[in-house]
Image 1: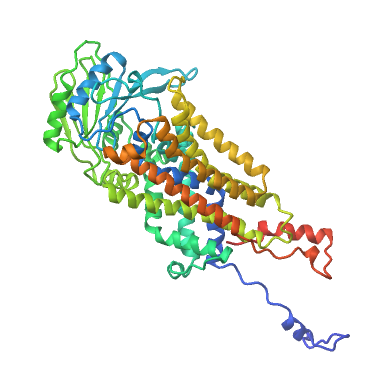
Image 2 (image 1 turned 135 degrees about the vertical axis):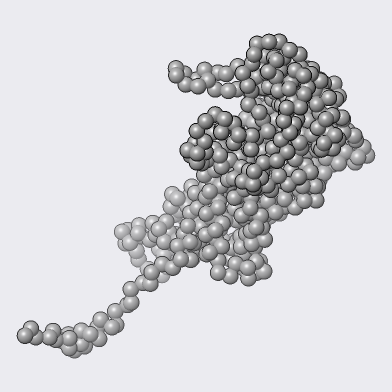
Length: 579
């Protein structure tokens, strides 16, 4: 028989048994729990695309008032107390398009509303070849028309601008990036945001208790409390807005199901009819036929939906016997973006199809789309959307700042920042304080760039990006704390002076707006001052803030650190820090 091992062997030096020695050894570290893992996921999902998410949130927030912003950026368009008749406007603009866009395969006329007093138009131009063997790329032109005269605003001396549409297009496709690239990038960011929200809920065990906890002036603790409160306050909205944002472009992000299930052109056309109110241009016959009365077609739609519930008129193959006209219902009176339209024979004016409903899946998508855009909302609900979305912007911003605040307290030597910390800190400054300045510069450019400049709307966009790049350069060359304070003060000054610039360069200053009942211009000036005050308050708070950092190890009495161990400590935060 093999003898049993002697477990009572004692150490020759200590006289303590080996079993006792083993029991005194430190227990192995416990495995990482689900919350710790989710915490890591929450931190990195938010950090890696946090700067783009902040920009998407802020530009999306102001886009809830993009029509009002467009009004403010076209001060030459007079304030109107009454809404023009959509049927008359549609006919007037269509008459102009027969010469301006002659030969175009498709027009789209967005009719004026109470919030948008002009008619916005796009039309297809000849396809552009993209290379041998590739499908030519479709191109479009666009213009804005005066609803009274039916002329483009440019010919009437109105400044050329994208208005609030710039922030709207930046929000989901990072205009002027190529559309597909921009939308894919926005989709990736939205997916990261969705992961960050879900992992954040799992991480914070007492998240609803934390909502009622705010410890003022406690440095890192205050940032975390603010981040938790903003997250919980708008959690349903943040979850809804992120998920529905992905749904709006789901056909582009995940086309494989439709490609697999729908084989024939007819099936794909049926799917398109469920999702879009833009009928694809059919094949022209070559037989010339004038368009029937657009006004009569719109009147028929008004009789069905209401006098001011017609949103858009789309015409394909105008002037041909195969012309079609789709009159689409507006979005303001229903909580769905599913297409509802009347399809007319463009040559005879006869109704060909009444498209007043879609399937359950398409209707679900339409409701989610409408919840994301909020176009159905009245003034009070739109302000609620704006404020909660602004809270979401602050949530992302506080999360980014908290990353640096927390790690700064753990640095072995606060004067020796590692590269990753340096990058995040400077990008935070440019993304948060710099973006405010860039957006304000876009509005300053609208007032200062001459109306005679060629491609003036592009010049306004260039102003935005050049100023944003300048703030990044400023953040790189200045000490971080000084850069925060100075850029916030610059933003506050730019915002505060903008109403004065508006009063000097236009005839629609605050006093004139109040006396004429021009609510849009008056509220815009007051909102700019409110945001200026917010930036000034942040600058003051930042100036008074004194970060709590532990002393450098080298400065501690009796402490000596070898170069090798010091290097290991400096690199530790990248791998060990947890949010």
